[in-house]
Length: 470
Image (cartoon, rainbow, N blue to C red):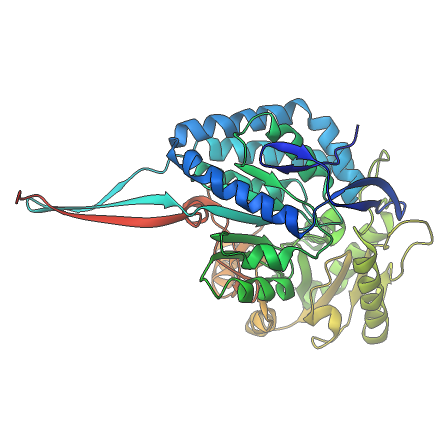
């Protein structure tokens, strides 16, 4: 039976409203679920606030036991989660299972974390201790491209640090969050975890609510700006992981055929709907033609299909709004570049876009300047590496990037000059849970992952002690 109910104060409840959920492979509804109104949002926040002192009073180890139980419950239902994820989001089943397994490991990673006091200074006369206290209620607002793992990514550190959570998934992909809610209802004390669904109408109220101490948001830069503004009045703690227009720079000493498959996979995974996906390629003139040819062959041979079907490599775009946006990018590509493969939506039900490779396109074209967030990849030529670096950096985004080099030291030298939060050399999308990631420029504020990401859910509290008795 498909999940449908909200989780508020430990109970699975019906919503004041209903919401249809669309399968992007068909463009048709496959579920009708509960949707919260403003009053139910208030109930969820109030429940989280009431539960916060008791949850914060537990030790990290005790809180970790709850997270471990949730991880175990998800693992016992992982096949159901993967199918649900593919049905609501579109990605091929193998990728969906990878996301679910990643989320399970993520929860177990945070379940094992311990936040201990640190002695900052000690002499015969003084001791200065820093310990970290929970912030209170955390709003976890998650996107539609990774609707399972973005929930665990925010819930894990928030809960282990002693906060309570109100999670709000994207309205086009709420099903995995609601399934997590079903399991959490039987595990956590009432009010510690709350999950509500809206239709993009409760985000402002959640982000600006005076009882919400922190907002952790992953999504578009435009929405991130609104959340940042909404939290300004009471100076909320805010983490924003936003858009990206990640550049890949291919140096002149690589094998074009070998690197082409890595570029293609890095650009087309999840139908290109990854904030850290390769969104534009700069290839040296000496290998440019061959790389373009290889990318086009890969695009033409890729199997685009319903993610539930055997052999599907690229699924549909997740929603109609993004599909229409990508159709606009395809028009721009045709007008301003040379399309080598794809270049059009597929003539079938659902939101399918043919994987598209575009060459000889100017740097000021929309497809190069903006974040396409879909299976459409522009490839540009360069002669001088300093020129390629300047062009890669000439963008409002700075989330990630990749350098591909035969000489690794030379690749690292180039990577050090790229203005992005993360730059990989000869690999892509390697995101260990103990390593922080986040963006520069308009790709975000703060970090997820690592100690920095975990500590973002806490308030540092310094106790400065004179050892001499009074």
